Length: 196
Image (cartoon, rainbow, N blue to C red; front, top):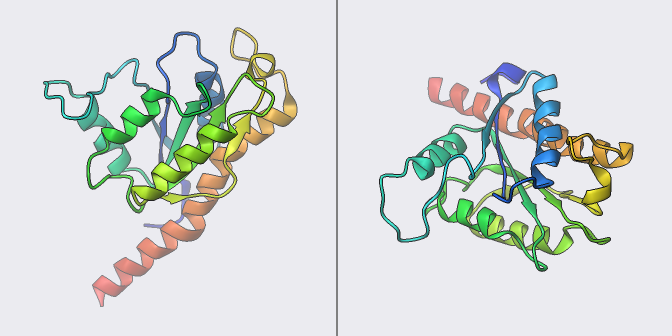
């Protein structure tokens, strides 16, 4: 693998199914930043592709598609609103559907959280970081927490706060920088070692 943008694929996962949610507005900026830099993006919206509760059996293809998306990704961006001082049940269900051992193991993961309150999504991001580390992912430093999200976006999803937009877009750029600097060189080295 070279360190070109064409070789990088990022999975961006929405962590809520609430209609009209603000998390999807923030995720849209992350996706836009990735695509503007020529990065291939796969998005997962659990409202469009339902998941199964742990232990449930069914013919639902959502979990399989989610696992394949994450497995083939160079990196993963997880997003969550903060509900009642913690992560959403949806993002926890996403993680549960990634299997055991998790396909997140060994994957670089960047975190994005939004909340209506003044302190932002600090608590949910702490919990999400802990869970991702526990399943073996490489959680990138500098998760982005958007506080007062109802004032940051209008109803059409336009960001009204330039500094917040810059921070949200940085989730994408930090992920791509990490993949280019750490993942791509390691994969190139592995190819060279196997060839000799």
